Length: 323
Image (cartoon, rainbow, N blue to C red; front, side, top):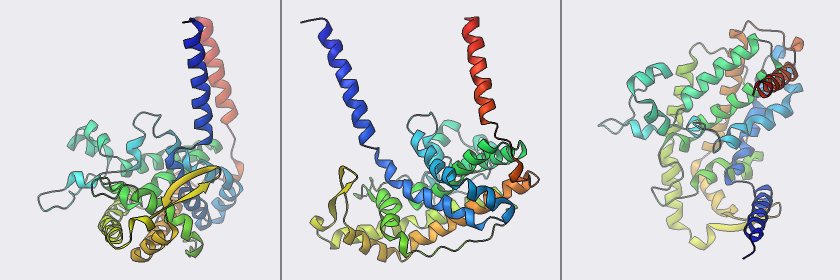
């Protein structure tokens, strides 16, 4: 065999895989719709001192609201930031323990590797709130926008019931795919029916308690999320549950609109209610970070992103020269 043939084959394979990746987005992109919408709508509850800045940069906030999902399989310890398996922490009465509100208390009570194995979303929200406060303090426009968008993402995740249990995709109960059905399919099909009204931003005295309350509320809804769909499975013929639809040029196998409609009715507004809660929570957290930073004038921010890039570039050149 010609020695060049294996190399040629490898080269062609890389090109083929690159082409495939470009034209077939990963499955989690189907959930982008909801994250973008709740971040967008959260802006309208902000006071005028914040509203004009966020409205002016709305496209950025929307687009970057899905950055955490884009990197969750590429960055170490990113995936656990999106969920928490509360059922892992059940007591003898089959109810969740009262969990530590703060990360430092959590790692004193539980092994850190175990915490990461079962998700850390409520503590991640607190971390991002702190980072957003620091971004406001430094008057750094780029960091404010990026951190606001990402904080909104994690708060959104905390309001999704299936992000709070180990049976996150119905894999334990013969309901594989229910995660996408609840989080993506239903909002995409029924969003125009929902009625969202801006909730005036409120200062959060106890952010840790607030986000944990949201997580527990999500968790209490898990039973209905699973049981209603299980009931539907048993009453509707399998041939009517799924269908093929095109997304762009890609044909996908998804839940039929009729099946989704029946499930949506059984949930009786649950998806809309959780989205409303998430929107208001994002508004309140953004506002709280701004208040904690001393209410900086957002019309007089310095865009330091280009300076940071220049500093990084110079540092890299110095290292290259030293080597």
